[in-house]
Length: 241
Image (cartoon, rainbow, N blue to C red; front, side, top):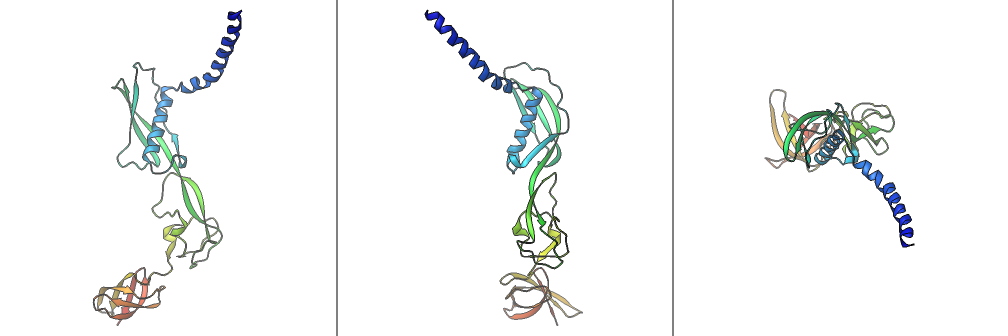
């Protein structure tokens, strides 16, 4: 009687174990090609500055077919190109070892895209406007390169003057902007002395804020005297004499 009662329990446990364990067992059966792809993804996420959720990888070349390698321990070494930026089209070298003995090397081409903030116009903006919260908004976009003149935060644009008119949903870049007050109180300025025949340069300290083409007080750092000069650009004033 005791053996009859145990048998159904053992059978039920075996069915339960196979049902629960099979998905995990299947999941672990990665092909060598899948393992290489996973190793490359891990290498990228560990070396780039952005979080993993802000990055995606597309494999541009097929992983060469690999026969089942013998050995108890298969390891991989992923190598980046010099000065790798981890964005755009690139390639990685993959070295494969079996029991710490080198067995194979391959090159895998990939495309890396990152999710980046960009600043866009919320509506049409006229030339010469000073940008406020209502003029611009933050949007996100998958990109393969980051232009040198790109801006990604509102702090980089708010309070600045836009030098051209733009329509709605236009991406704002650094080249579209200039400081609303190119000369600010307490900041160093370059003082240009020009009488049409001779030009001299010296340094000064702005005594007040100044928009372009306005007259401001500037303290000459050499003589300590206050002079009046016309704002002609970012951190620049001119004295005509």
